[in-house]
Image (cartoon, rainbow, N blue to C red; front, side, top):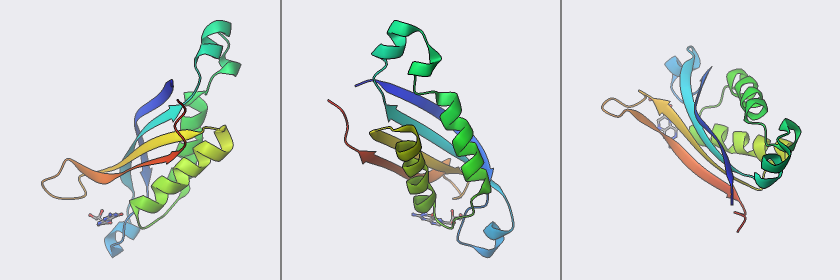
Length: 119
Ligand SMILES: Nc1nc2c(c(=O)[nH]1)N=C([C@H](O)[C@@H](O)CO)CN2
């Protein structure tokens, strides 16, 4: 199985369960792995045959920056849903990090994996 990945995609948004978090924008970081057969674009050298990581990134930047969820779990699930439904990706692993949210920790967050991993 091949992977197309996006590492440390930083997006500012409203996220969190506390009152003060509803009034500020915080920076999240997304690490994404997406299953894709890269042999086709490797043979054609044509961007049209790829899972275009620029297009996925743009879509997520728009969605996340306009969202205002309480939990990182909810946002992670929605992002994976967009990737799978709009870009036709069968398997996605997404790590959503909230840097600096807990004193003493570099980052906290969730890592989810959805879909059937191709063999
Ligand atoms: N599992 C989770 N735990 C916590 C979350 C969350 O979204 N998922 N959120 C918070 C607060 O918003 C925190 O990030 C503020 O520092 C606490 N725990």
